[in-house]
Length: 83
Image (cartoon, rainbow, N blue to C red; front, top):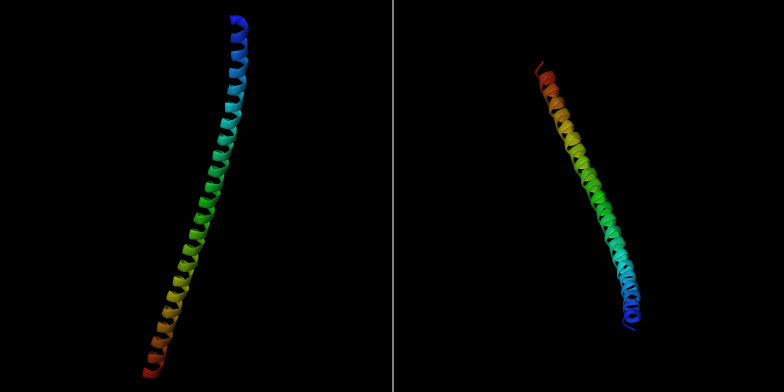
């Protein structure tokens, strides 16, 4: 009888191990999915940050060019008035 009981215990242990393996696989899949989602969020945040930086840099450049142009126009007017 002991051999039969050991066989039953092994079957039960095997089924329990299979269930644990399936549960672990599901958990691993969820973690991988969340890591992918996290990576996507980080990529989007980086892209938005870069876009904002470039927009601000473009606005600063245009603003500087406008001031420079206004200064140059003022100098030209002063020179033409002096002549």
